Image (tube, rainbow over all chains, first blue to last red; front, side, top):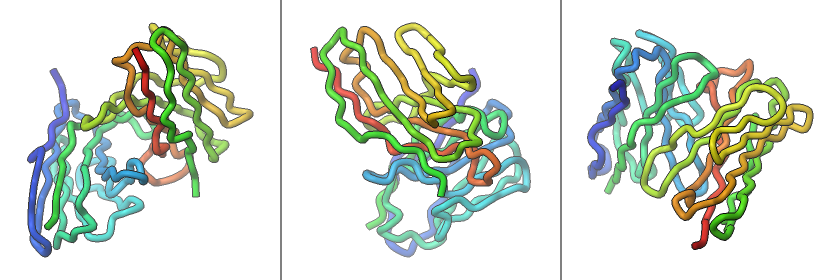
Length: 112
Length: 113
């Protein structure tokens, strides 16, 4: 069955380190998204991509970057992790712009 | 700033009752509306979508849309303890570039046995 996976599921890192969170989907969806979810803030969009080589900033993109070299993967990189980036990160994909999004299981990141 | 508003709750209903979850949105051009369920510690799961004014039923769930009032709701009939979760309303970002969907912060539902 097609699915969307994220790895690692849990990560503890130190301030200043570079961290990459992986997202892989087998639905062949062109559209992929990264969100963070924090208590009191709901889901906030970090970056998104509408296809290979396309990336766009979301509302909370500072300190994060993404690259899209194929349809299946959209890795999220924290260039220099900060304690404020401690959060749960969700990757999602969608078959068409404006349509439903399907979420991965999430990555819980702790920055000490 | 386009917004999707939900009462954070918690909304507490007894088992077997109807739970009514509400959502308002600011973008009059929005055309697609979604309800997600999120259990504690899990990812959001799509349970309903609606595009046209009126009601859409799927099992115990009914989504209601009123575009004139910019209002969408989710009714859960015969509520079960397993329905206890946070329900997220999402609306497409018509004409915008912020990744398609705008999410509300969610309403926490608690169904008491």
